Image (tube, rainbow, N blue to C red):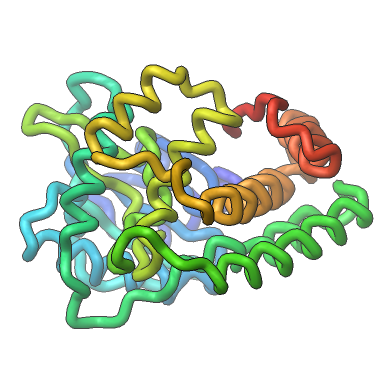
Length: 287
């Protein structure tokens, strides 16, 4: 789904007070995210994401009832428009500063203290998108690399299922990075709720450990995260398993963009080569 297709869906949805051509594109990934006036609209890549969109709305309502600082839905129904799920959200005020790891840790402490909601949260299916992302990559990537990632996926899925957690399992955000925290006038707010799950709390903490190891997060910034949260997941013997699973998923996620982006293809090649070589020092770059 490119921007033009997403705008056509946005126009057909008829959820904005003005013309879709005037909406500002904020992001283009699994969802195209547009802002107009006091609303934000998410257009999903395909119909397979409809159930996830519906669950994200239920999660937003649950978090609002629990008083958790998080983005709020403007409409409580997910639309399916021309094969794409569409959801509408209240637009957050302009940020007062970038989010930092301490902000993430503070929100995770709140989320990790929540009891389970009245509806069922799924387990964190970290590796569930790998097949779809590789399918979208098609012939742009080497079939041997795709086979390698499928093998890694299967191995880490089995290993993760056998882990003994250090923390009590329960609700998690699922993709706890500073980019998914918005710091407005009233403080940090969680955004991108679609990966909320019920699983090992360690999933949320491994995200920042991988940011330190692969994406250049300074050691002192990571230390501020563990200090604010109160525990360093790297002390847990299962950390390497969840880290490896997330690396596998992150590598496959970039692959889906390879057919249309030379930059994505180059980043995929860097990532998969470092996994094949077992070189954990190779820097990865956000895409």
